[in-house]
Structure formats: structure tokens, C-alpha cells
Length: 191
Image (tube, rainbow, N blue to C red):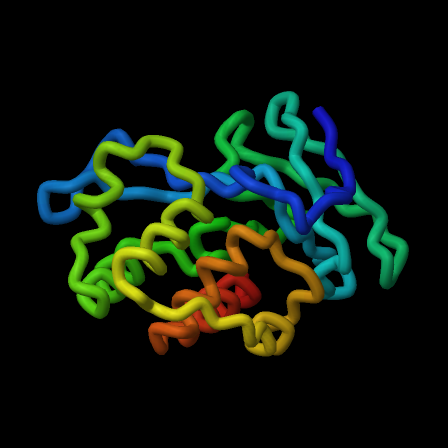
């Protein structure tokens, strides 16, 4: 079990993966969620995301580790789902990576309609598919632009975000869908 500062955010690849639920379908296709071993962390005492990314190196009975908040100095415990990296709990706040990174059935469905591609069918035979690969494929297939204006990420309160998730979010922004990401953040912060 360990949680450590992730020092190489520019070189990251494959830390955010698309995984298949093994129960439930949408229009006859599997449903998907994200797992992420690299993530932002949140202090529930002062309400601030930290300025560095952290890497989950594993947990024991769900306990990953703790970090000292760089703003208020509090020690914040981080827990996961004991081997399933779909979310972490920082103190009392759960960060669900699918919601945090703007990846849900409704987003996949709407984006698929915009680019005329059934994303559920596209992902069906790609278990543990890296999110950056999906982003690259969508840029290639659809011609959708890759927007490098990341101001909306900072406006949502994130000083740093995993590069793979940023690429996905900028595609959503370029497709006119950044509101889904911002709505997800608002929902998470109400918990």
C-alpha cells in the first residue's frame, strides 16, 4: 500500500484505462467505466485540490495511504475499492474517475452521435483500453479537433490533471461538451 507524488506527468501513458462492466448493457453493448492509478487528490478539510498528481501503488484492505495538504497541513487518508481503481476517497470525499474525467454512458452516447460512431460498439472488444488511445482514435476517425485551451480545467478548481484525461476533456470541449465535465465536478463537490 502506498501513495506517492507522481513526478512525470508529461511522460504518462496508460494510467487511465477504460474497463468493461461485466453486468448490464446499453443497447446490447457493454457499459464502461474508468480506472486510474494517477490522480488528483483533494483535502476535505480546507476544500482544495493539491497542486501535484499522486499515484496509487496499491492498497491493503482499501487503505492506500495519506498525504499532507500543502495548504492547511492536514493529514488526509486516501482509500480505494481494494484493487478496483474506479474511485478514491480523500478524507470524506469520493472522487469517481468516470465522473471526474467526464466519461459516462450519456457522454459516450452524445459524443458518438456528434461524430457518427457507436462508441459502445467501438469499445466492445477492447478491454482495458487506455483513454489516450481512444482520444487518438477519435481524433483520427472523426477529425474532431484537439483543443489545447485548458482554461476550463483551471476554472473548475484543478491546478493539475492527468495528461490522458486532459486529452479526453479537450476533445469533449472541442465537441461543445465541456458542460458535462463541469456538471460532474459540481456534483462531486456537493457530496
